[in-house]
Image 1 (cartoon, helix red, strand yellow):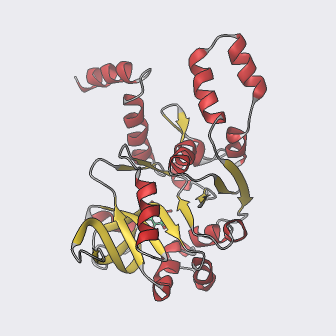
Image 2 (spheres, protein in one colour):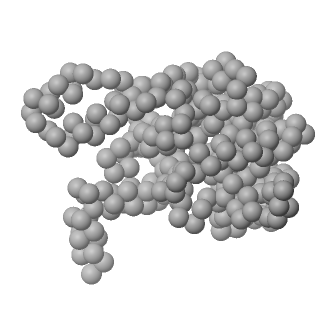
Image 3 (cartoon, rainbow, N blue to C red):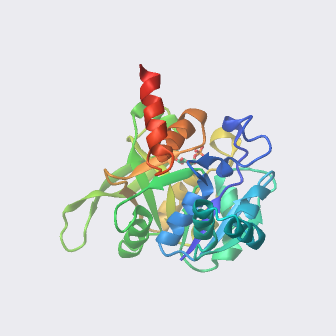
Length: 298
Ligand code: G1P
């Protein structure tokens, strides 16, 4: 299965940090956000990845390029840790392709840019500013791909429960329990999606289940993206394409497990939480930072 990472958004919520650099390249501990997502795709068995970029996004291409001169230099200077981290990046077993979305007209349009790349196969979409931290085995994305196949769905989505007052930040689902075929019992964390609405008010929200940035699609989604009109925020929304897609077959949703966590890095307070969380668990940074934070609290 191929993977698609939309990373064309302007990142205005992260200005001025993102004036001339992509929000997907901001560091979370030692790695830029988008590296976590490429690594997640690799761990889910995806080998071909299309990144949808745009204005001011060239640093993403540079990051995933090979740099033999830098590697050689680190070797010569015996910078063992940096060499180790850089080799891990260069040895990722994926091929990365790029396409540009000149004007960011919405997530639906961005995903449409992947039409030629995915051809007639099912494909994964992972948002370029959202890290899913999954220490479960298999990881969340691999389970989502499996669920899409077993449920014979046209689309499978990752979801998480959010406080109802935050529902105007997300695509929100109306669901019914997903019944396993032989057992006809409900499986925890699996849902049949009845409807989807992008960024509703708490009053309009049919539940507190929010789409959290991982999708598996059948290529028929492109027929429905074409039909989408400008929606919330003056943009063409992927959620609106999925609303139309319901007539093609079933849409299913898989909730993040309790031990799994979504880190959105698209606004400063959320970015700060992601940065601190990942630094705290880093072998080199964690101990010193923890001691520093304890002192701050005094
Ligand atoms: C996008 C999607 C939304 C989803 C969210 C997850 O919104 O449109 O449905 O819930 O990502 O982060 P954005 O954050 O780009 O406004």
